[in-house]
Image 1 (cartoon, rainbow, N blue to C red):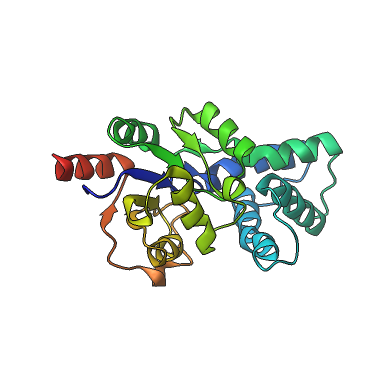
Image 2 (image 1 turned 90 degrees about the vertical axis):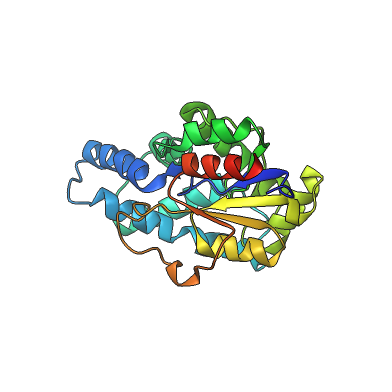
Amino acid sequence: MAKVKMLAFDVFGTVVDWRTSIAREAQLVFAQAGRDDIDPCGFADAWRGLYQPAMEAVRSGKRPFTRLDVLNRETLDVLLAAHDVVLNEAAAREFAFAWRRLDPWPDAVEGLTRLKARWPIVTLSNGNIALTMEMARRAGLPWDAILGAEAVQAFKPMPEAYLRTADLLGVAPGELCLVAAHHSDLAAARACGLKCAYVDRPMEYGGALAPDAHMAQDWEWTVGSLVELATKLFDEAA
């Protein structure tokens, strides 16, 4: 651990519970629209399912870099149309911003606070700055800096997302540790030379197997919570 100088965190699924949070907001929106026939958890899963395809258009060069807030609104419009739900502009905009109001996992604030006492902690998320900042203020997430896709103009898992983050922080890739609940994210970071800490979030997909479970590796650290990660890293650094 002596070589790791900073910790960078994936956010969606690793630090915050997107599925439960989005389902809660979807249930309210659909109830107000008189559409109790739409499964809010299924809607959350479907919305998340459009996340990677939307970013792929940017990664492939088919469109210029576009903030996640914009992509979230575009994919929401697709889903609303598919369910024949009509919202006015203000309601649709507010619903799209549900991704700014995600609740943290129960261990997140305590774990981050403990880790921050020893190491700088930053975000390395595909979320844009305004989204991540609002989420952090609402949830009490004590980031030292909000970085990620917008800061480096690249979505994960492109190598630039990891390498440019290390460069912005003034450290070598091997001095930066990515903390994430996704094996695919960690695999891409490891290929760029970063250290990797895996946080198991079995309820991210409502108990269903994660789509990248087959990409598991022997990561430098594997834990069940951010509190456990803090304990392990402090013990190793002692």
